[in-house]
Image 1 (spheres, rainbow, N blue to C red):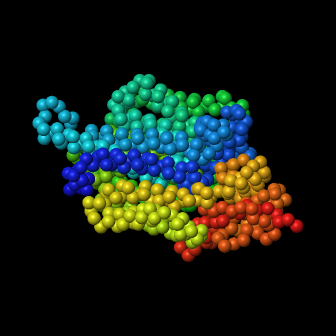
Image 2 (cartoon, rainbow, N blue to C red; image 1 turned 135 degrees about the horizontal axis):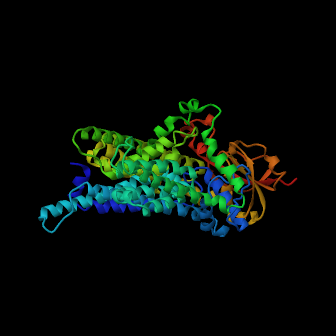
Image 3 (cartoon, rainbow, N blue to C red; image 1 turned 90 degrees about the vertical axis):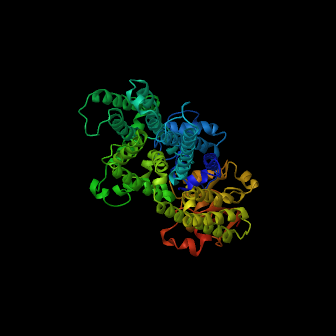
Length: 601
C-alpha cells in the first residue's frame, strides 16, 4: 500500500494536496520585490532598456546605454515592463515581476489540470445511474486520486529550480513558456478533435506561438513546429514518425506550415512597426540568433566539450529540476520499464503522455543544433516533465525520492550556514526570528524522517524542494529591507545627484535604480567590488561613490563615510573556493557597502 493510499483512509487527502499546491503558488510572492531573489543577471539589462524606452514616451524604438545590447529581445517583453511600471511612475521590482508570477501561475494551473484529466481518464469509467454503491465509491476514489496527482504535479513544477529562478524575475521564460506550452496543453487535452480541426486550432495555435515568439525569438517556431508535426503524425494519423507516406500527410503538413507561417508573420510585425527595422535585423536576427549557429572552433569541437556541449542538452531536463533531479531521473527509468513491460501486450500509453514525451524530445533535438547551448532553452518543456513525474509518481522507485531528500537536507543545511554567516557578519543574534530556525530544523528532520519511513518518503519529497527554495527567500529577506537600504535622509541627499556605483555585469548597475531611487547612476566596472581600490579616481567623476568591502575592512583612506548598508555578494572570485563558504561565511556571502565622499582638505 502506497503512502497516498494509506492517507486516504483517514481524511480526504486530495483537499490537503490542493491546499498545499495553493500555498506553494502563493509562496512565489514572498520576497518578490527584493534585490536578492534567484535570477539571471540579464533581468537588470532588460529593466534598463525598458526604463530608458519608457522615458522616451514611445513604444519603439528600444533604447539602451549599450550600443551592442539594445534589441536583445522582442519588444513585447519591454512593453510588459513599461505598462507594469506605469511608464516609470511606479518603477519597482515588485511591479515589474508580478506579470511573470501570473504567467507562472497560469502554467502551473495547466500542469495540474492536464495531470488531473490524464489520471482520471486512465482510471475506471465514469459513474452511471445503473452502477452499485461500490462502483460509485471506486469512481469517486479515482476522481480524488486524480485531483491529488494534479496538485502534486503543480507542486513539482513550482519546485523546479528553473521555474523559481526564471518564473519570478522580470525575464522571458514565464511568458514564453505560457504561450508555447499552452499549445501542447490544448493538444494533450483533446488530441483527436484538435488534430482533425481544419482551421480553428491552427489559427489559435499560430496566434499563441506568435505571442511566444514576440516574448523570446522567432527561433521558437522550430522546436514547436517540429513537435506539432510529430503530434499530427503520431496522435492524429496514428502512424510512426517515419511512416510519412500516408493519406492526409499533405493536409497535415499544410496545417503545420500554416501555423508556423502565421507565428512568423506575427513576429514580423516588429519589423513593420519599428522605426529602425535594419537595426532590428542586425542586432537581433544576425547578432542575437544567427551568431549562436556559428563558431570558429567548429561544431564538433564544441559539441563534445565544454559547457556548450551536447551533454548540456542531454542532461538539461534533470539539471533544471535541481533538488528534484533524482526524481526526474527516476521518472525516466520508470517510463522505460513501463515501456518494456508493454511490449507485446497491445497496450499503449495515453495520447496526453505521448504529447509530453514528444514535446520534450522536440526541444532537446532542436537545441542540439546551435553551437551555443544552454539548459535555459529547455525551460518551455519543463511543464511536460512535471506532468510525467506525476503520472509515474507511484511507479518511481523509492530510492530516487530518498536521493532527492538527501539533496534537500543538504539544501536545508546550506540555508542554515548562510544564516549563520549573516549572524557573524552583522553581529545581530536576532537577525532571523526563532521561526526561521524552527523551519530549517523541521525541514531537516522531515527529510531524515522521509528517508527512514517508507510511508513518508513521497509526501515529504514532494514538498521539500520548494521548502528549500522558500528558505532561500527567507534567509535573504532581512537584506531586502532596511538593512539593504540607506537611511531616508540619505536617499533625500542623493536625489538628482550623480553617484558612482560598482557593476560587474552588463546592466548590473540598474539594481541601484531601485536601491537609491532618484539618484543619477554612474557605473564603474569592478569584477570583485570588495577588492576595488582606486577610490580616488571615482571622485574625479562624481562627488559621491559606493564602495563595497568585506566585513571589518575600511572602505578607503582619505574619504568620509556618509552612510552604509548590507549587501549579498555575487560572482565570488574562484580563488575563494567553495571552502570559503564554510571557513568564513560572513565574508563569502556578505559585504558592507559604504556611501563615501572625498574628505575635506
